Amino acid sequence: MKIIYGIFLFLYLIIMKVVIVAFLVSFVKLSVGQGIYAPAAGQTGTTAIHKDSSIIVSWASSCHVIRGLKHIDSAQLGYASQGVDSDALAIADGKTVSLGDSGVATIQFDGTIYDGAGADFVIYENAFDPTFLELAYVYVTSDGVAWDRFDYDYTDPRTTQIGPFGASDPTHIHNLAGKYEVFYGTPFDLSDLRFNPSIDKNAITQIRIVDAIGDKNRLHFLTDSVYVNDPFPTPYESGGFDLDAIAAIHLNPATSIDEEVANTIRLYPNPSINTLNIIGEFDEVIIINTQGLLVSKSQEQSIDVSGLSPGVYFANVKHDNEFIIKRFIKK
Ligand SMILES: [Ca+2]
Ligand SMILES: [Ca+2]
Image 1 (cartoon, protein in one colour):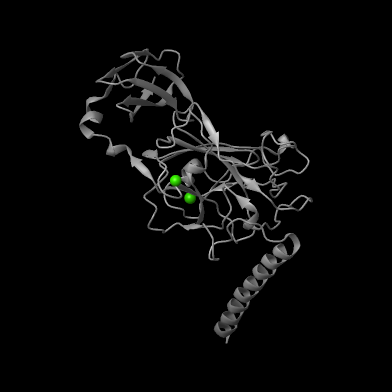
Image 2 (image 1 turned 45 degrees about the vertical axis):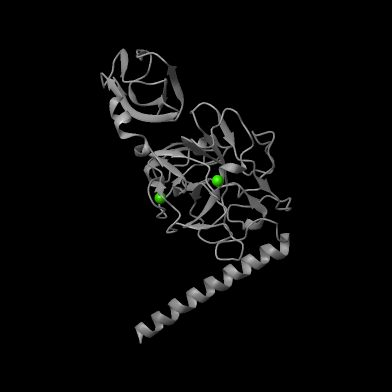
């Protein structure tokens, strides 16, 4: 008897969830009207990419998060803290790192992303259904110095603040991460970037994801941008964008570089204290820290690293227009 009751209760809860979601979706559509952009996962015309899609060739191998506050106007509440940086690595699994208000995640792959046909990389959030969306801006760089943001659009006509659990319709959202529910990623196509001589769309070394605060009453720090009405406030450990994973579709793996050339480049000594020597033929070396920030650029064989703070660094050694990435430790 108990078991039968349990089964009924289970079915009832599932049916109720479906009814509630259907109601919310239709409510959002009725209240704000449909936009012109791609609809939720599973619907005709969606651009959502499931985590098991065969077009995915790789997942992020490094992630560094600078957390934002739980509530941008209440520093005393502290920073978002749910998850750790490594929760954004490997295949989307629903485990996330929360960025907080305006928090920043910087991501690298074992290789560089290039602009192939259609979407080139995919960002996964953990929205538990198609309408509870938290959004983020997306930037890329090809040298760790110059960053370019994807132009986005946000056309939801509502003028009232979307609350912490308010619903959104993905048809109003374009080129912002977090457009789709958990396990369905938002695709980004490098051909959408405006021409920028400082960005090589065929050798993207890092992707940066910046939480959209969404506060109606706040002038956004990006003065050239369209206002994004994101759920606000979200003063929780899990506040802000919840990053699950980042997939690459068009990746030149680090190992595709002529292995012989890669093996001729050596860093010595490693760890280094004052001087890092690059052994082998190269055109230029760019040293970046684990936050993806450039710390040194040189064409010399011997580089003075005495001023660097101790830690792990990446030497991006350029040779014949390809980057060989070598890791070293500064003591
Ligand atoms: Ca592309
Ligand atoms: Ca994850």
